Length: 141
Image (cartoon, rainbow, N blue to C red; front, side):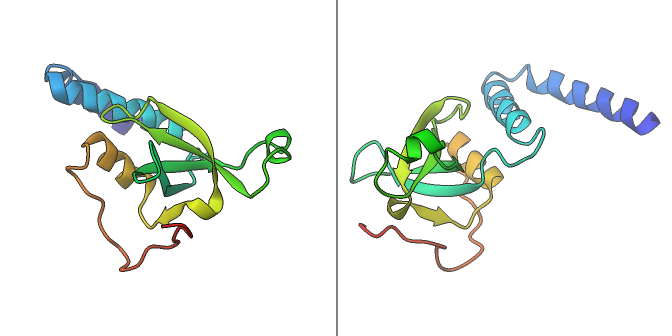
């Protein structure tokens, strides 16, 4: 119980310090809001980190796989699709939600946390490379 009380006070103190630094404040609270949302109950909101073609066919964006389309939508789509969320930088709480052909995605071997840091930093803080090869490749590169 003492650890919880002391810990909570330390967290509030630390957040108070961060709240006084303009740029750090906005980045910290954006990441905190996303983390609280994603990792609160099941921790499975974003299952995988993907590359998808967006906003045009020659560009790639980091996206999070959120699942598969609902049955009603899946019936209308010819190929296998996945649901993806493409966050915007530097505030990943905003973004775009799409259904993308699974065959046109590249699965990355990085954690959701690493991808969020990468996005929030606008590419300045790259994820740690764990394996020499990507897990999956898009068919139409």
